[in-house]
Image 1 (spheres, helix red, strand yellow):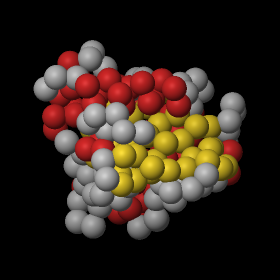
Image 2: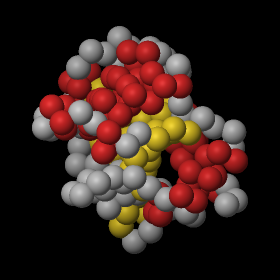
Image 3: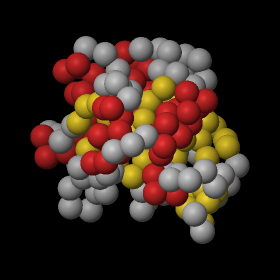
Length: 167
């Protein structure tokens, strides 16, 4: 799509949108874009087809959120930008951060566990699944915003709202 403002929403590691099957328990039960979503000439383009098991990263976030609220079955990774967070707050959304520096060393040593740990920490602290979870990265890890919702339509509508919102 070439909606104004959308290209600036995609992280350097490219974006990803996922949607879990009802009652999903593993990443093989989460639909995502194979090869991720990228910005080409100001347009968002899916690198490949949507398929089950295409993304472990977004699946970890969704599956962790579903463990606390089974209706929260979708998420999208977005570029970290304080202006995007400000827009999310101006829309009245719950926004929460986790710090990778606080992750226990034994978990950090396992590839991909940071997203499960960070998502769980945020949800445990808030007592609910927020609309937005972000981290500011660390050495070798890009800061990323994750927008959560009940389904891809809700998430995409959220991305569009963030792209159009005033800072």
